[in-house]
Length: 289
Image: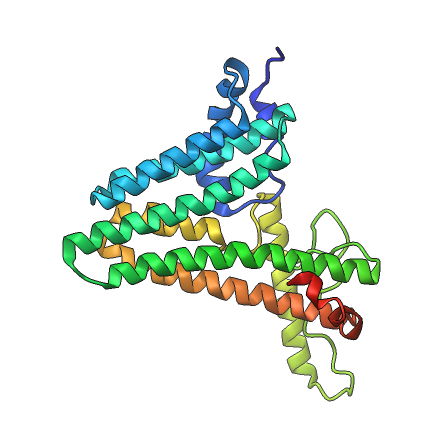
C-alpha cells in the first residue's frame, strides 16, 4: 500500500475554500487525514457516517445544555467531514453516492444541531424565541444549499446557450483572464452616466479585484460569509461564548448569509442579462424548476 506524505494531503485541499476551513479546520484535518490514509482502511463513506454520528452527539450535548461540549463535538464532526473529502481525492475512491451522502449528511447534522440547541435552551428558559432560532437556522441552511445548485444550473444553461466558458461570478481568477463581469454595472449606453460616478464604480471594482486576488493567494473564497461560516458562528463560536451569544450571533451571521445570497443572485441576474439569456432561456424555464 502506498505511503502518503503531508504534501500529498495538502495537494487534496480545494483551490479556494471558506476562510473558516482554510485557517481553522484544514490545518487539523490534513494531519488527521495523513494517518487515516496510511494506517487505516477507512473509506470516505465510512468517515461521512462517522461525521454524522458525531453531529448527532453534538445535538444531544446541545439538548442537554452542554454548550461547550456540543461546540467541540460539532467542530470535530465538521473536521472529519473535511477529512473524508481529502481521503477520497487522495486515493481516488470518491463515488457519486458518496457525494450524495456527504451533502445529505451535512443537512441532517445542521437540522439535528439546530433542534438540539432550540430544545435545550427552551427547556432551560421557557423562551419560545429559541424555538424560532432553531427553525430559522434550519431554514437558512436549507435555503443556502438549495439555492446554490439552482444558481449553478442557471449558469450552466446560459453557458451552453452562449457556448462560452463559465466565468467566476465572484471576481476574476488571479491565475487567468479577467471575467466577463469585471464591470457588473456596465457603461451607460446613452452616455449620461456622470464621469465621477463611473470612476467611483470602476474604483470600487478595482478594489474588489485586488481583494479577490489577495484572498485567492491564501486559498480563501471571496464570498466571506457562506454556509460554513454560518455553521461555525451558530454551532461553535456562539456556544463557546455562552448562551447569551446564541441569538445575537445567529441573527448577525444569518443576516450576512442572506446578504451574501442576495449578492450572488444579483450577480447571476447581471450575468444572464449581459449574455442576452432572455427569451431563448425563458423557453427552457421548466428545465430549471
